[in-house]
Length: 161
Image 1 (tube, rainbow, N blue to C red):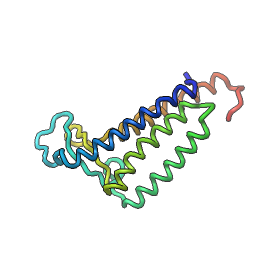
Image 2 (image 1 turned 60 degrees about the horizontal axis):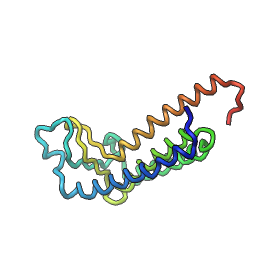
Image 3 (image 1 turned 45 degrees about the horizontal axis):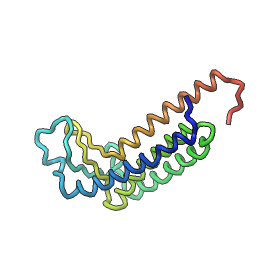
Image 4 (image 1 turned 90 degrees about the horizontal axis):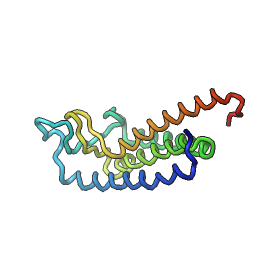
């Protein structure tokens, strides 16, 4: 099901609000939460600070390369959002959701030199709300792409964009 493009984009302010709230949580968490190393016997979910100096999953990279990589991916996603705005607004929307979530983590890197993660899961994985927004955007994009492909299989004579 392809949503009317005006309706789906009304959700973007909510996504932006979540990422802004995430930034406030990160700012206050840095001074108030314990470090992940202070948690001896973690529960399923703990609130603790993890400073991610690398990329996703703590893959080590220099900050300059991470910022450059983020900008290139952001530009690519912006192109996808623009290209699909009218015919596939759900793909466009999901690309914008990913950009907004990534912008939250990019802000951390520029402001602090690392991404602030504060939700520790099983004592091993650390995430924040911006990460959840990015994951949501990726899942939405995969679902939208699948719908788009199945639509073209059902309507093969429809001209492609």
